Image (cartoon, rainbow, N blue to C red; front, side, top):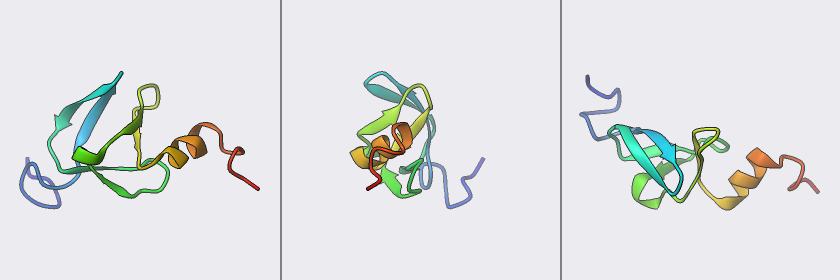
Length: 73
C-alpha cells in the first residue's frame, strides 16, 4: 500500500512506543507531535508516552500533555 504522501518509507511513520525504544509498524520518515502537530524526524525522536502511545516534539509538549496547568501563568 502506498503512503498518501509518496512511496513507502516517505511520509508519516506508524510506531509502537516501547520503554526506551520504539518499533516501526509502518515505515516513514517522521511522526507528528501529539500536542503541537509538528513533524518529528524519526532520527530526532526523543520523547514519547508508552501509556498514551504518542510522540512529543520537545519536553514542554510532554509537560503540556501530562500536566496541562503546569505551564499556565
